[in-house]
Image 1 (cartoon, rainbow, N blue to C red):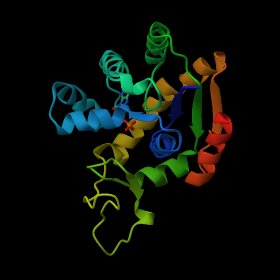
Image 2: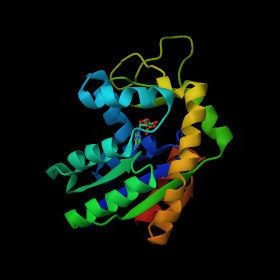
Image 3: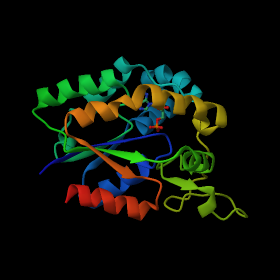
Length: 215
Ligand code: AMP
């Protein structure tokens, strides 16, 4: 069966980490719209220029931009074997439009997995998050040796803090999540696709729950 998954959850809920584990464990493609946009900003493409001010402030990029991006991305042969979406859809109009896209492609979603994490844990995770600018792997400062330079264990690049992980942008992102993205839970519950799991536990424990859902 081809797996087509959506990971739903607040900023800092662990979507990226679980999506990377799913990519490795199930040979499906990890599609992070946030990573695609950050690469576009780095490469100074038209998409990057469009998205940058929204992202830096912690706001959502407009739906029409995101829908065009996802349509162009997923309409390629490498996604026929399945994918896990991390960060899309994020609004009800995105979900509705994505439903029509899937219908056109004759493809169905397998499940929408919602990672439930309380605010205190989210703030701890986001404030200590560091990312590799080369491969997008994320770390937490608690895992790193504070005496030396903070470098990616995969490619040695110097880790950075995302601009939108500062306290002000985080508050705006939480707000956008509650207002725009939380209603998606009901959208997918109505379609019998929603699965909620406790995302506040260790990475491996959360992944085991996802494996059980997919078994
Ligand atoms: P993420 O890496 O998923 O936390 O996304 C970082 C930022 O990219 C978000 O705060 C938004 O500004 C933008 N973004 C990513 N995905 C979407 C989406 N589906 N809709 C709107 N904005 C998005």
